[in-house]
Amino acid sequence: LQQQQPQINCEKTHVYMVLGRLFKIHTSFERIMFKILEEDACGVIVLITEKQANWNNQVHNRIESHFQEYTETWPPNAKSASNILGRIRYVSYWNYVRILAHADTILDTYPYGGCLTAQEGLSNGKVVITLPSTYVRGRFAGKILEQMGVPHIIATDEADYVRKAVKVASDGAYREALKNDIREGWENNIHRDEEVAEEWGEAFFQIFQ
Picture 1 (cartoon, rainbow, N blue to C red):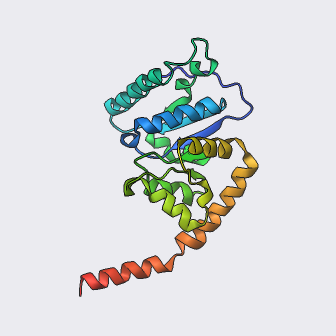
Picture 2: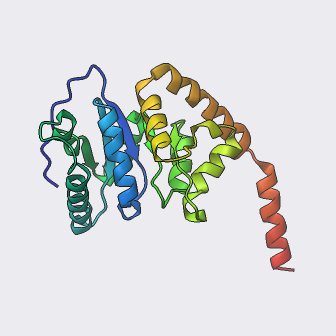
Picture 3: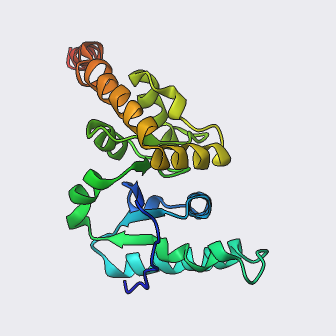
């Protein structure tokens, strides 16, 4: 993918990372991404590319097409329209771990959410913003956050998702406090949860009886 990347005149760039695979990016989530970058002029959203170049190009072209529809009602001289697409960056999956280390906020995809990817972000002490959908495929991250004791970063709707994501990325002190809660919740309520292990053990015992 060849991208023209605009200059970001900010003291600090806010890095929003999407850990989910490209096939999970729905037009509803694209709209959320546009709104985040519209609200945060210092924000950059990072998507992880697939091994298949044609799939990357298809997603890139669809996002561009959807963005044109999204901005149809904007005035011709709208300042924010000029560089939003350029602040959606595509990074090779080989750089996944390196980018994760620099991410300010992790964006869980919607309505098809993550499970392992959400856990990967949380286990690295990152703040994961999620919006639970109607079906189980979009509710894993929210339930993990509830179990960890940090339900206040679960969004209630798209507008709340945008507000929470921008707040975490732009407010360093708030983000660090949340990260401390996440580390504590992961260690005490997820990583060392013996009840889950006992339930799995009991299930397997019943299956093989």
